[in-house]
Length: 294
Image 1: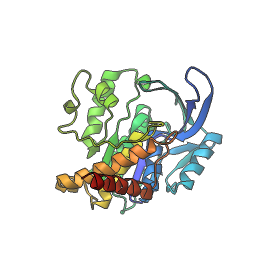
Image 2: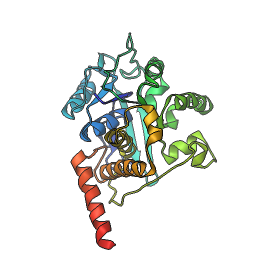
Image 3: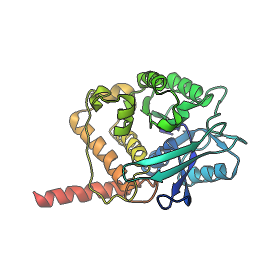
């Protein structure tokens, strides 16, 4: 296992047509999407969570296993699975979550899992940090591994689940402090630092885009986060200190890889990350196109 992720795994029910109550279910949850993306991009990946023994939990376990994700750290519970309902709008996606008392929200391993020595990245974040006992145990797991592995934090802010945004912003400051890499969307930045430019949360922001026909944006950010870790490993980054040793050219390559992976995800319905070969093909095609125009 080279990359480990912890957090929620749920079923996303997406509206088949705006304004209707016809929904189609997909395996989802930001950490699960990222785990699947890391595995498809060729890195041995493990997932730490608790899944229900209900019919949704069985689907989630099978989905992870079919995608090559190591499920040996996953606990099982008879608590229900987390469910999310998504309505697409022209501006963004609207979510309704059903999480209270769910299997992943009640994840409380005792003792804390010990990650294998070859695991170099640990991802955390999203709605798994909004409910105890899972939130506390995830923070303890991250703290135990900070400094030893590259810690990646994706807040994936969902305001409909946050009753006290001011208190949440205070908590986020602590989570930022444990992380070596933080991935923010523009919506995350607006909620965490309202009325301030993105550089209020980041000293520097580099954005590289890829031109594709967008079918769906669900899972794009998760795939981008996966692409960062996979490409950083390919560039020899296995310890937090090595992040600061990467030059501008290497960072450009890392970000371009991540952005291309995310763009390819957007060409398909739902969270459907690409394979490593698909990303390499897209990068080669873009390079050939640039060369022919020069």
